Image (tube, rainbow over all chains, first blue to last red; front, side, top):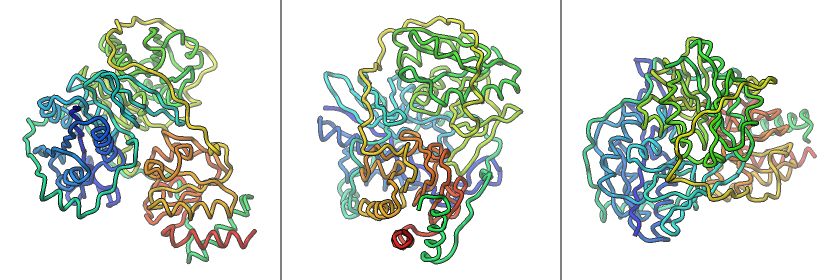
Length: 255
Length: 319
């Protein structure tokens, strides 16, 4: 019976316009919409549930108490997570070093066999949470993982390299893996199932110890990159734009 | 304590990765500001000859059978010892499948500050990191005493990190690498593909904006009409809508077509680094602030579904 813990991080939604605050050195998060770190942590949850279905065990999903956390946790429950935990602290200004230390103190108590999280997030200014968490727990770490199996008391993981090359790594238990992609696309759950999960499952709340922010660089200023160039925009109706594109294709010698 | 800049060289199966040269170029700029030397750190086994074209003042070579190919545990142990002993001003790692497995762990283990996703350094030794999918840059002083830094491509040309003269190589002590918790079992070759997108002259690329699997047909129809091949960014591949062999990006293929026609791709740095060798990039996106428009030569601010069928018809008529 494998005891699997998944750390689900929340990040500001990049679809919203990003603004820099009055200090000039941080994002203005007053109106940020916090969503799950979707390209990666969604996959980490999926990988955890796939492993449970295949090898047995329990999946605990743990998330920082930011707006949107309940939604992330109940969605995970609807997918098959067994235990939901929300960690209370002021995480909106926390860095990954602080998150890793705070979560390791709590996760240690669960005595997990396996901890999964997304391999990276777009706001990782001081390193990614997975390896920082692994080292706080004194456990081995492998990132860019796209497959996990348990065999003969060891993990066999698939680690991705550029160009589609994969390394199969053997890792002792317990371990922390940074998930690049689950073995299958994250399953879809209907809103009705999430609503049902809200009624049948509950979220445990735990307090984080004081956040220790050391290990991150100080930011003096943030700015939006000035593009060296910007695309020449083709305007008009779909028909007009299509005609312009076809003319361009001809000019470039592909038509 | 020194002012030297260490660069942890990345290599796989006897091939030095481009990011290593990019980092040597970055280290050169940073070393001017700190008045230190550029030191390449090469971990391997019978791999000394990999160092012959490094633009470095010196190469520290750590040879051990357990360092023949990259594994996180062995690299962490070897580098932890080296960094604590030498205390360089900064250590550069790739923000890659290799460097990212090591840098954060060492930051926690050695209590040293870490700067992630650095793209370039200023002449005053400040770092400039790229975050939020390339939409925000963050600048600050290089932290002390030893800054661990992970680097993304784009700020320096790999050629700047190469030299025709071979640098002096010094063997450096390797600690006992015992009871390793992570070991390489084997490599699995990329799945064989029907087409090699890195060699195709005309690519129709789809991103998250394509929304669902059925819509891939729309891109296919356009590709067929114009004589191109469909490829995709990471979110599309992760959904299983196209095979991994069609992945363009950091973990997929780098491409260099005559035309790269990007539909519904925002242009995250992991994608952009793989398409900059294209002759002409044309992008269609509903978001006028999408970073893809900063690398595209031509852009269309439009919903791809409003455009793609009309465009396919227009292409057919033009033939």
